Image (cartoon, rainbow, N blue to C red):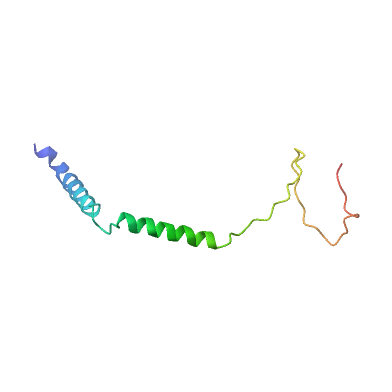
Amino acid sequence: MEILLWLVPPVVVTVVAMAWVGWLGREGRGEVDHDEAVRRLGAALERDADRPRATRLPRRRERSTGVAVRRTPRTGDSPREQRRAS
């Protein structure tokens, strides 16, 4: 029986942790009346509807050729002087 004494500390810690979590999760802490919760929800939804949303600009879709191309930084050359591999 003495060989099982090493189990006592983990069991005690587990029971204390279970009691602590049970105490923290008890009902009645900061509970709001159902009608008050509905009123707050309605007010929050109305507030969001009044504010304009940011719109994203449509992104120009790049044409996929199926070939991996490494982009190089542009120099002072004009587009006509650039060489293209084709």
